[in-house]
Image (cartoon, rainbow, N blue to C red; front, side, top):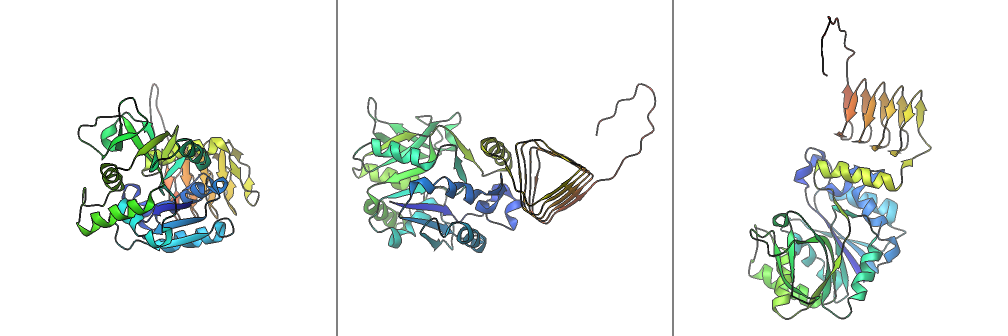
Length: 336
């Protein structure tokens, strides 16, 4: 089985952090998002990992080659025009050929490893493929799966419906057995310019496969973490740090307190500060006279005299506060 990871998007919901880096390279809990995704695939031992790259692709390629070239057989496909998830999958057709595939989105991290999903897919038996789903409170925001009554098979798929007929949201991981049929449908969609919201949707391609007779089943995804915007990024950082905090031993901590869980990168210097809980600090960053909690701090950043909570600070930033001098009368109340 081969794995496809679409990771070509610009990550507009994470601006300004993605002005200078692609979304898969945004740092949380000790490493970029793509690192957490690949770590969870090691047990799966795929034949190949195919990364679809585009926006600032050199950063993704450099990081993955440095850390995972000895773990996976990795190939890259360049999606020069971001025309949707279906289009990104279509670009891999020459590498995939007729092999079975797993598709895993490049901005989703799952609490379970992909081996758990593979075992559920295998237990579904003979079918065109299986789609990971989870019950959601706001189905209008997701691709939605409707099942055939009293059956395990999927009746219909729809991308972000105005009037959803189900609350089973597509979770961002797919197993496809009938890959030649998928590529045939995607070719038909692109040739005939069949788009939804100006993109070639994978959901539409899978729905067309069902209309042509392919039978799909589902499997349950208990927990997923969407790293697509700032609030969910901080929530994912907390979850991952709860699993395992990571304090690299090549750092310098002077007269400071670390409240775990935290992740501290290489060559970080912390002085007269309180760090944590739930704080990730990337390499080569200096922090003095500060209190930081529930935050993600990028590389080569300098922070002094600052109290930060629930914050995301990018690379090469400089934050400096000033001491305040107060002369407060009786019965006063001041908030900073």
